[in-house]
Image 1 (cartoon, one colour):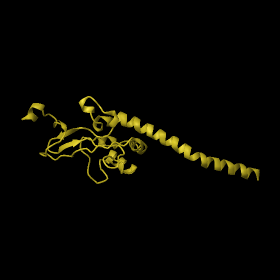
Image 2 (tube, helix red, strand yellow):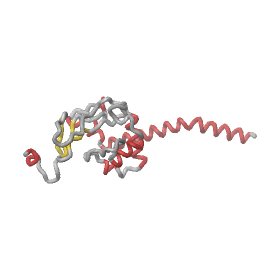
Image 3 (cartoon, one colour):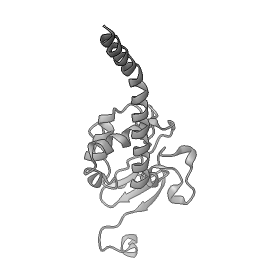
Image 4 (cartoon, one colour):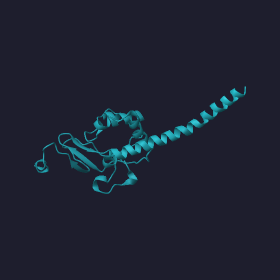
Length: 175
């Protein structure tokens, strides 16, 4: 009888301690995601002011203020990847974030801009891709609606950089 009570007490203690263990695992996953986001340079394209030399860290990953023109395709602005439900990815599930990171497809089935290096991120492990999603979901939501994407010839309402095809010079592109 004593053995049964000891086992029952141990099992009860294990179940009670489980949520605390899960929180530690989540913190570890978020820490891993932050490391990968930093290493992956997500800040570069998704934080306002970064390309202008003055990143606004109060709006970290809240979307860029600079677009990238890809000749023949249009202009793309780094989106808001904070968990804001209206202007960011707050309504996306973990699986939808992972699919965007690794397959370049948004929940609305739009393919991400070619400037997004999802081809490189496609080789992330499932755990690493989920860690990135967990980190993004843990951020402070930033309300920042990003303009675009803009089709070729459309008026662009933001500063932009032009990405030149291989072998083309800036002088040739300006003609």
